Length: 61
Image 1 (spheres, helix red, strand yellow):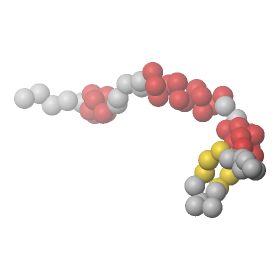
Image 2 (tube, rainbow, N blue to C red):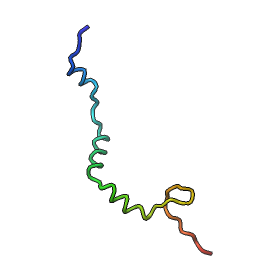
Image 3 (cartoon, rainbow, N blue to C red):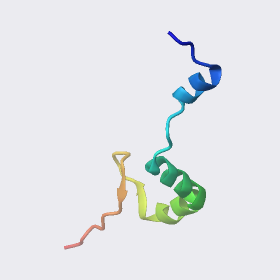
Image 4 (tube, rainbow, N blue to C red):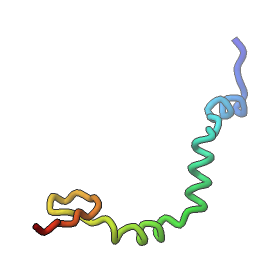
């Protein structure tokens, strides 16, 4: 049995970066997440049960 080198052992543990991982890394670098959250937060708020969701307007009869 042939012994592998340290470089070969290290290379075996490396996994290929998938298209999905590359896309998510690019999105994370491009999108200003905090500004997006701040812009959307007025439309969503915790309800009485502590869950988050869109506001539901009460229709008066």
